[in-house]
Amino acid sequence: MNIDQLRKNTPGCNNVLHLNNAGASLVSQSTLDVQLQYLQEEAQYGGYETAFKYADKIESLYSELGKLINASPSEIATTDSATTAWERAFFSIPFKNGDEIISDTTAYASNYIAYLQAERRFGTKTIVIGVDATGDLDLNELGNSISNKTKLISITHIPTNNGIVNPAEEIGSIASRHNIYYLLDACQSAGQYPLDVQKIKCDFLTATGRKYLRGPRGTGFLFARTKSIKDFEPFNLDLHSAEWTAKDSYKPRDDARKFETWESNIAAKLGLANAISELNALDSGQVWSRIVQLANYMRDQLTLIEKIQLHDMGKTKCGIITFNADRITPYQLKESLHSEGINTSVSVKSGTLIDMKRRNLDAVLRASVHYYNTHEEIDTFVRSIKKIVAK
Ligand SMILES: Cc1ncc(COP(=O)(O)O)c(C=O)c1O
Image (cartoon, rainbow, N blue to C red; front, top):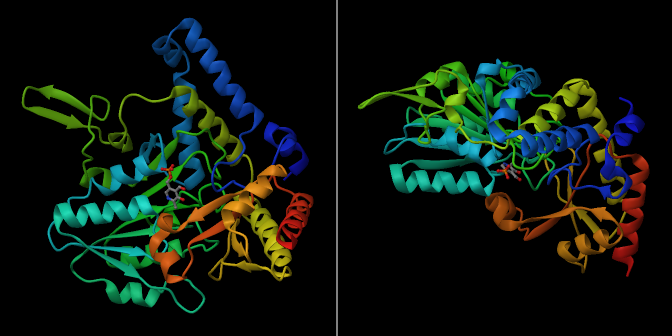
C-alpha cells in the first residue's frame, strides 16, 4: 500500500490528526469529487434525469459491495445507515412467543433496544452469551445455549467501545450446524477486517458507510442471503421493494432490494460506490495488518504511561483502542486532544450497557486508527497524552 499516495488523496489528512475512524473516517478527494459533481448536475438538470444518466454508476455500488464481502450484487440492499439495514433484517423475522434470540455482551444499544422491543411485542427472550478469561465470546456457552427455541443468533463483530474482534466465522459454523438464522453486525469491521460472507455463513450482515469503508455519512448496506430473502419480508415494503399487482395483492422483489425503499441520497450512494471501489483496489489482508500494526504500536506506547489504563479485550484486537486516564475524564481528554488538532471520541456506558457494566466502566476514550494514519501521528498523539495527563 502506498500510504503517502493514499494520504495525498485524502484532504483531511492535511488538517487533522484523525483518530476517530470508528466514528467516521476521512473520505478521499475522489469520493468527495464524485458527490460534488453529481450534486452540481442534479441542481442544473433535475433529480430524476441526472439519476437516469448515472444509472450504471449507481448499479456499480451493488457489485462493488458484493465484491467486498464475496456476495452476489442481488444479495445487497443499500440504506441510509447500519441501523436501518439491521432493523429491516431483524424485524423481518417472524418472531413468536417463546422464541429465543442469542446475543453477545458487546451488543450495540440500538440492536439491544430492538431485542427488548421484540420481547415486548412478540414475547421473545434474549440470551446474552458470556465471555471467557481473555474476554472473547465463550463459544462453548454459545453451543450449550442453543435449543429448539433458538430463532436467531445476532452478534456484533467488532463493538463500538472495545478493540475486540468476535469470532464471526466460528459462530457462523455453529449457527449453520444447528440451522439457525445468523445476523452479523459488521458496522465496525467492514473496511478494516476482511469479510467473506461465504466463510462467515451469515444470513444477514449489516454495515455503515461512514466508518472504515470511508464512505459518506448517511449510507449503509445490508447483505441478505438469497435463502433469507425468500424466507422473510420486511415491514417497510413500498413500490420499489414490491409491486402492487391488484386491489388485493402485491408481489415483493426477489432480490435483496426487497429491504430498500425507493428514495435515497444518490450523491451519497455514488460517493459510497467510489469509496468501495477504492477499497476493493487494495488488498483487504494488507489493510487489516496495517491497522493492527498501528493499533498495537499505539497500545504498546500507552501501556508505558503509568496514568493510563487500557481497556481492550480479546485475543484478536483491531484498530479501536480504548482507555482511561487517572484524574481526568475521557470527555476532558477528548477536548484537550481536540484543541491540539487530534480527533478522538468517547464511548459511553449506555452505548454498550452490558459490556460497560460488566467491566465497571462509565465512559472510555476511544482512539481509532485507519490505514492512512502513520506511526509519526501516533507518536504525536502519545506525546499529547503524556503532556495532558502530567498536568
Ligand atoms: C457496532 C455498531 N453497530 C451499529 C452501529 C450503528 O451504525 P449507524 O449509526 O450507521 O446506524 C454502530 C455505530 O457506531 C456500531 O458501532
